[in-house]
Image (cartoon, rainbow, N blue to C red; front, side):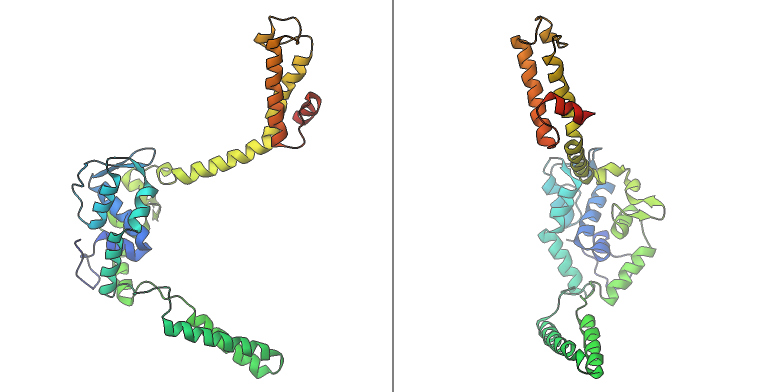
Length: 297
């Protein structure tokens, strides 16, 4: 994979590398997808499905781009199913290692070395001892407070970027070269000034948030069904009341003068099934027509 060899802020850094510095592996994968969109190598439908224009991986300039094109394999996939695997791929690991070797990111950000971990454990035990002695003397309280502050400082996770990495990212934020760089810095869901980054690629809002919105809509619908199901079920039970009268309004019952006909009985059984669904939705609705009618009112 072609990598920028410079270790100083400048225009030589690739968008994927800037994306990794700005938002980690996920942002780098989004940036690779944006580069493929910018080059006309992939398309995104209104439903949010990503498809490759060519079936042979043609046009990829990095290993991550090749991974994305090969993963599509002629089939349309949601954006999340494209970005997610790419962010955890071996190709992304190679990008991470390259940035680490050039001292742009730390080797183990957010994690402590073995010696630091042992020191934290010892200081934690010492801090507990000082806190126990708090009730004895004011000096112990002061010492315990100092130890607690020191522990809080040590327990901080290391930042991902080195000072050199911060310089590279700062330069990229102020010297963007196009819409792919905008994705690297802000992400596909980001906002640049007053403009959505997705608008630069003509992507409507529902494309990036289609799956979460559908899931929330389904959950909201299931809640409304459980609350309002009694009303719908009770209206269905109202048909039981109409079937129990001498006049049957359904077409299947018009052929009979009374509700004792087999067709009306089947209608009544359907009313009973509606009543049972009403009972399962809410305990306040029973299978009898009178209780369901009161619930619907």
